[in-house]
Image (cartoon, rainbow, N blue to C red; front, side, top):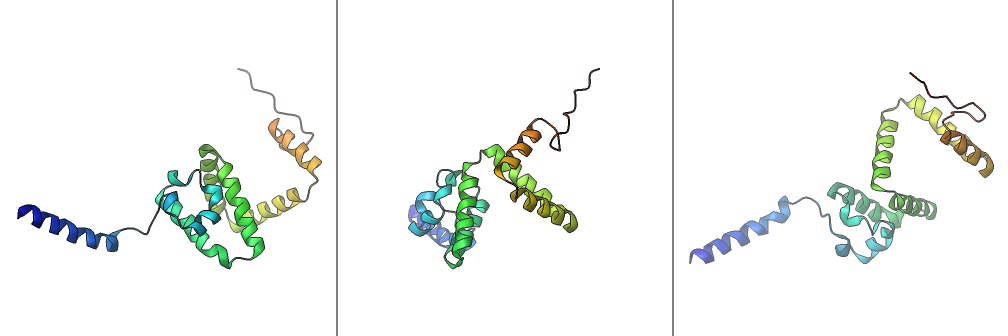
Length: 150
């Protein structure tokens, strides 16, 4: 009799659990086929995402059908890029995003204009700038700073 009562109490408490549970954060295999198709660039890493991150991606997947073709294309490209990042690179990207969000609007606008100017460069000019950045200089043709010796 006690076992029956304990079982009944457990069943009753579990029936209330869904109302108290957080919104769903399913494993990859639990996603609907349409969600898997949309989120396919993230398939490999999905099960390692925190529940909040999964919810954000699921929200995006829900909005995907109502997006324009250009928006869908952009979202797929961003997911593919995100999926290609290492965990360390993702942390760095999130930190850059946080810094950008706390930046004053005029600085963000300046940064946006600089990015647009960079995007308008030819591939050769971009490569030259990237190589200059790797050598430690901020401007093309500027000498690299020499190390300070003590």
